[in-house]
Length: 392
Image (cartoon, rainbow, N blue to C red; front, side, top):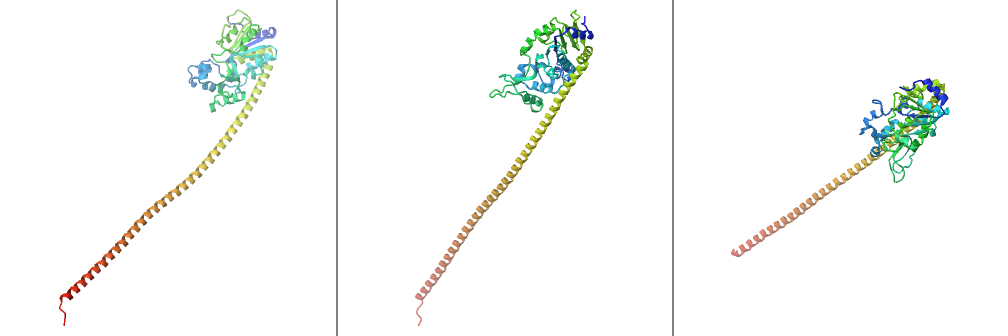
């Protein structure tokens, strides 16, 4: 048996027999928004994580791996962070069920917060695997500011700055309140079991039903409807006319279902509202991005001016230093020349003294020689007078 595939019968059942509808959502609900699912062989999230050099794809959501190396997760978070995507037709259908007073609870495995952005009230949502909506320090459990977290995540590809706790003395890693492998599911998930058990209809959309305990909620014996690309879980095995199986793209089947319910105009109106709100958010995002770029441009200009001023000062200092160096070199040369001149002067002075002394010595010697010659002449004259007879 393949389950009840009559969409008209499902529409009748919703209108006539349902007051409390529970939805269980998986990644397939958000794929038309541009967010990849996890397990598709070629396009899934895990199939495209090889670039992050992980020991295994699931490590990006492993708490122990995150504590050692949070970079892969924040690289991925930069691409998946809320604000880049708009709710789908299926998200608006959840809001529509709430508007008609039929929504008891929406349980989602998704972390993209698109249910919130579609206008589904927070108290009607159980994010079984957590979400990007809040975050806290792993060390001291202190909540971290939403605006700062958004800024850090959206700019991570450029800054590579990991969110850290701002409590003095802590500096612990900050992680979005997403349930990683190795962490417990939120208390709200356990509290939701009774609502699933007592639901008039459990609509399962866009999930592989392979991750427990979430998948276990689809096993309760209440009327069910599967809207999915593939047959999953035990759908199609129950011999029950209230076990519906509608295979195909989520948004297409939801639109067809709303046509049968007579809700298509309401659905499209809510979707346009969600689209408009997202476009407003995107416009504000673009404005914020433009302001951020302008701020970065001004900072770059200021930095360039600081560098130019610093360079100019350095050039002036270099010229001053060069001038001082030249003056010092000149003074040193003059000092050396002075020393040389002084040395030469001393040598010249010594030579003059020596020459003068030599002259005086030569003069004295000549005078002595002349005196000696005169003495010898006088002696010869005296001797001659003694030996010669007197003349008569």
